[in-house]
Length: 389
Image (cartoon, rainbow, N blue to C red; front, side, top):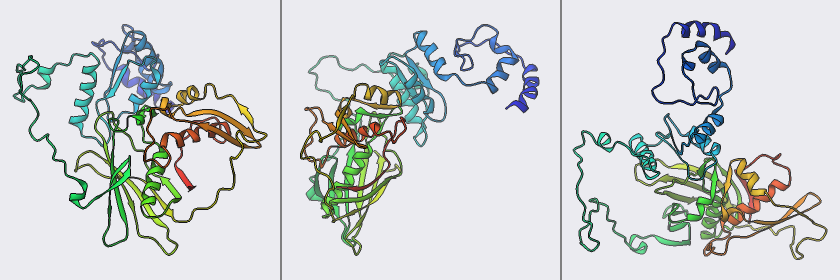
C-alpha cells in the first residue's frame, strides 16, 4: 500500500469531518475513538497500512459491557471471528446478511436473535407501511381460541402409502428403489431439534455435520444394497446445521459396475422446495470387505505407553474446533512405535440405536490423530476417506 499513501493523505486532508454520533471502537487502535481522532488525516493513512486489530476492538467492546453484536455486511465472516474473540458465553453475535440466503428472512432472524437476548427493536418502524397493528390476545389459560397461521398444518401420510419404504436408520427416514437403474435413494432430515447431539460439533462458530456422519450415511446406503465396504469418499462442501429449521438430505446410490462397486453421492438443501441442492460428498461403495491387519485381543496393547490427554479439548477449542460433551469422547491414549491407540466413549444418555458406528464415536477416534504429530499441531478435519469397514 505504501506507493499510494502520500496521494491518499492529500485527498483526506481536503475532507471535512464531523464527530461520530454513535460511539466507535477503532480496529486501528483496538480502543474507543477519542474526540477529534478520526478527523486527523494520519488516522486514515494508518488505517490503510497498519494491521487490523479486530480481536482487540471486540475485547474493548466487551470491556465496555457490550453483550450483543450485529455484523452489517454481505456475509457472516466477522460474526465467526467475533465469537472467538469474546469471553462470555452469554454474548449474542449475529449477522444482518449471509451469503446465499434470502435477505429479508436473514435480517429478520438477526433482529429476532437480538430481541430474545434483550434488545428493544423499534417494531413500529419495522412494520411501517405493512398495515400490521397490535391486538389483544386472551390471557385466560383455558379459553379455547387458537392463533395458528393459515396453512401451517401438515398432513402426515404413512410411507408405505406413498410407495416409499423405511430405511431403518436414525438419520435417513426413507428409502426408494429406482425402477430403471438398480439404484436407490435414501432421504432424511437433519436439525438440532431432531439430532440435538449435533450442536456439540462446532467449527469456526458454526454447527457442522461431522465428516464421520457423511461416512455413516454412505455406509448405511451401502448396507441397503449389500455394499458394506466404503472404498472411498471425498467431501466437497461442509454441511452447516442452522440453529433453527433443518436441512433435507439425500444419499443416492447408482447401479453396480462389473466389480459390484457402486457410486454414492450425498446432497442436502435447506428446508423449502425452492432451495438449491448442494453436493457434499462423492465416493464408491463395494461388497468386498478385506480382513483387518491388526487385532486388539490384548488391551491396552503390549508395550504401549500411556499418554496424558488432559487439555486435549481445551487446545482444540482454542484452535476453532468446539467439541461439546457428546464429541469429547477420548478417554485414554497410548503410543507404541509410531502407532496411537485410543479409548473413546459416548455419554450414556446418547442413543446409538440404528447406527453402524455413531458419528460422535468415530469422530472422537480421529481426535487421537493429534497425538501422532501428522497435523503439525494444527487443528484439522477429515475430507477424504478410503478403506472404511
